[in-house]
Amino acid sequence: MIESLLVANRGEIARRVIRTAKRLGIRAIAVYSEADADLPFVTEADEAVLIGPPNPAQSYRNVEAILAAAKSTGAQAIHPGYGFLSENAEFARTVEASGLIWVGPGADAITAMGDKINARNLMAAAGVPVAPGTTDPAADLDAAVAAAAEIGYPVMVKAAAGGGGMGMGVAVDDAALRIEYDKVRAFAERMFGDGSVLIERYFPRVRHVEVQILGLADGRVVALGERECSVQRRNQKLVEESPSPAVSPELRARLLAAAVRAGEAVGYRNAGTVECLLNPETNEFFFLEMNTRLQVEHPVTEYVYGIDLVEEQLRVAAGLAPTFDPDALAPSGHAIELRINAEDPKRFLPGPGVIRTWVEPAGAGVRVDSGYAEGNTVTPFYDSLLAKLILSGDTRDEAIERAKAAVAEFQIAGPKNNLPFFAELLENDEFLDGTYDTGIVSRMR
View 1 (cartoon, rainbow, N blue to C red):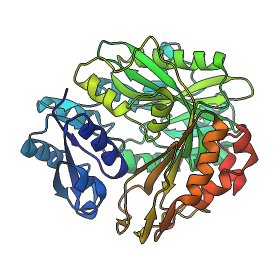
View 2 (cartoon, helix red, strand yellow):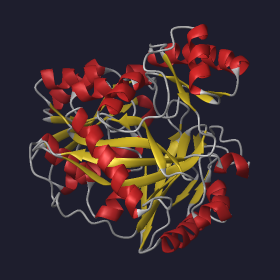
View 3 (spheres, one colour):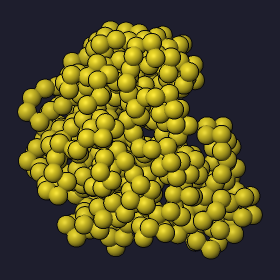
View 4 (tube, helix red, strand yellow):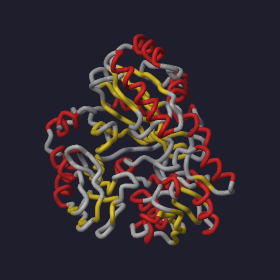
């Protein structure tokens, strides 16, 4: 097993990776920016290295600073977490060229799935269902309009190099498409350095369902069930649960088989997620994208399958067999994750500030993966995620009841937070009966 691990990230995911590393007897090394010096992940690591100022480009995206920290601490491996450099193929190559172990998929797989148009075409060739859309970037407005005419309105205008729900717009006619095309292209050039745009059919009433895959050290790819991710604001997830209340055993078999084909098509190793759109009326699903990293919502899969995905990532990276039998995967129970963000619970606008009170809920089936503690300052430099509240139970109803109690018990004072939104959601009839789709938040607001 790996003996020393540098976590090239911050907040709750750094803390979560460090926790597993220390349980396995691995020396855990943190890197941190000046803004994060007082956060729990820094003190919980066996060693911590300051790598720069608050600006991510000068700290958490600073490849030279991270590699220098790895060298100075004698780190054997690097875990990128999610966000920042986690899906940067060049960083993965540089890590391995430096003689370090990269805890993630190979750079070629990251490259192949990083461009959404290329990914769509690869998946179609592998027999994975894809939504009607362009097979090449729409070079200009006229090409986008022509593509939309062939696909049929409404359409999704999407940054080919985007991710995390960013760089998307919906157009219902030519006039709207011209506005959205320019907007998405400009955003993509600014955020991703690549203005390529694809046009896809947009489904107004759809569910967002994803499959957790794991590429093992022996070359096999296995699927660890599905997660429902349809509670979203601005195309970004707020709630995830497993299993999905919309997926029947027959549909689950098709989903998981398609996800395995997707992983096999790119020789996938380590943890990844195949995201799909599901039409609940027809049970048709379409490939959306593959996230070549550990997902924020991985804990719900851990509960349902009884495994530690970070430990499995480390084992794959070290060339070891998994802790479980790949031929005897058996899910059990239900789990729900709520993303507790520092944001207005009505308009979801960021609300940084000093945390005056922080009291976490506890009890049977309650897990809190937090990045902060009382007295910490939530700054505007990073994602607004404060903590993940994960609830499990033998049934969905039991998990929901535990979620209601935990939301009521969780006390946060200082920065704005979205706990009141979750209290409202957990009484919503659509959510309670499991019939919700990606429009549930907009209907609540």
